Length: 216
Image 1: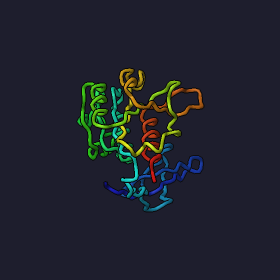
Image 2 (image 1 turned 120 degrees about the horizontal axis):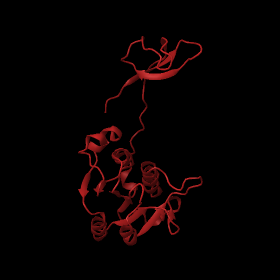
Image 3 (image 1 turned 180 degrees about the vertical axis):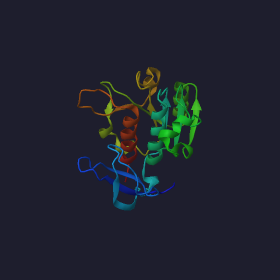
Image 4 (image 1 turned 90 degrees about the vertical axis):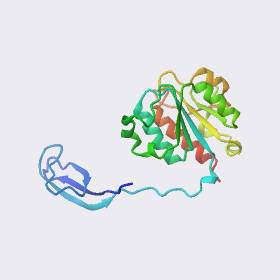
């Protein structure tokens, strides 16, 4: 991955003083994006810090993901980027879910989609049933009364079998047929006015909760 160096620029207009980053390859004559006044470099030549890679993959639950009928291409790209960071082994893309062959996905995938194992499937229920016969435990991320909080995951079982996490449509949720064959339905506790999160945000919370809950 290309590593850029950055400068911090600040507007010279005392009534503005807008402060912002830009690539260090740019010159000193950048105008303020807010008031169009001249700017100065106030922090010189720093890089964007990267988190070190985790070196203990065998201590985590094996996790594959089923994305079923996800409407937003950008949500798919974001989830593939997050899944790459969390160590998801494979993305099963189904229904209307976009695949990395769609160039729009690159906007949020930022290259992670090119490093991620994936396959496309027309029918997610058929896929889930096949994953069950192959030894996967099926977990669906969904709301409802009979769900298990991601903060109460059965840690003793996390390493016993590969987990297939199913993420459903942003509006209609997980297919009821998939819910019926799932081994566990998990949810994220909500305390505010809304009763759901953006699907890519919810996915990120869930995959890290699953992967790190089994850490030893």
